[in-house]
Amino acid sequence: MLQQIQRILSTVGWLDIIDILIVAVVLYKLYIMIRDTRAVALLKGLIVLLIATLVSKWLSLNVINWLLQKTMTVVLVALPIVFQPELRRGLEQLGQGKLFSKRIFLDEEETQSLMEEIVRAVSQLARTSTGAIIVFERETGLSDYAETGTRVDGLVSSELLNNIFVPNSPLHDGAVLIRANRIMAAGCILPLSDARTLGKELGTRHRAALGLSEQVDALVIVVSEETSIISVAQGGSLVRYIEPDGLKDYLRPLYITKSSPWGEFFSRRLS
Image (cartoon, rainbow, N blue to C red; front, side, top):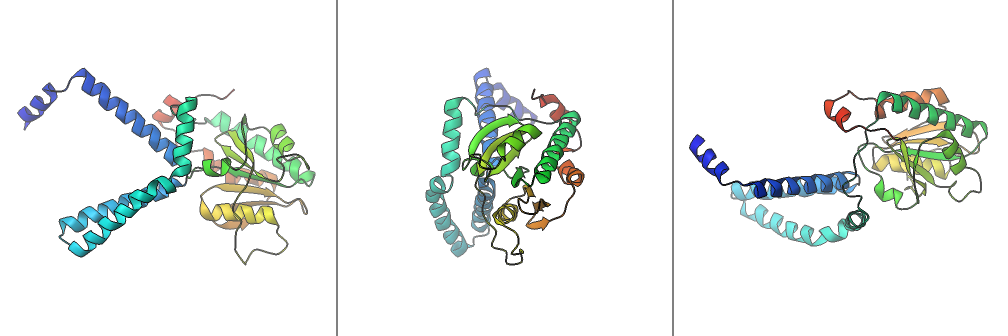
């Protein structure tokens, strides 16, 4: 066995190693790009279907295997249609040189600063009865929704958030999407919830916040324009009457995690 491994390794040259590394990096970047969209759930379903096809063939379940093979054929034909937004965005990033951009990790100081800026902004919005909806990205990417608004790519600050939601401004009616400590986009359109249990006194902002939380794992903060009440939507549920300082209890789990050597190695400041 050891001799076979040595024989195989002896046939591997520097070009083969470079070839493998390039393929590994490209696949990793493609995974990062897919992870930032809802397409990851579709990809998982495709993997499950593929595994089921192989298992049915191994167990000689001919009828099931035939059905799964036909299903796989239909799925493969439909993939370019299903993944059209991701394919378009990938080509755009490739053309703009953004495909190999670095991922961003926040340290404790950046996390604390971010939470203070959010609390300060929401307090000001509630005090002035300014309607607002702020979305925080978690595991499920929100790039699809960012495409419906205006790209910002600015560091989160209370001043910037308050300026975005100024009444009668071009972006005040839509949602602000936040990834890490940067504002991805503003004026974004979110799906509305069809929940009948939602009170009639709640408007479009609350339905949009609840609707998004029903589809993805994002955290959504809503400030009511009529009542100045602060609400938080996540996991398909809406919690109202939250004090500004209480928002930290919801924000802290999003950013404060156990430190890892890889996170520290790749971390960088945004200043």
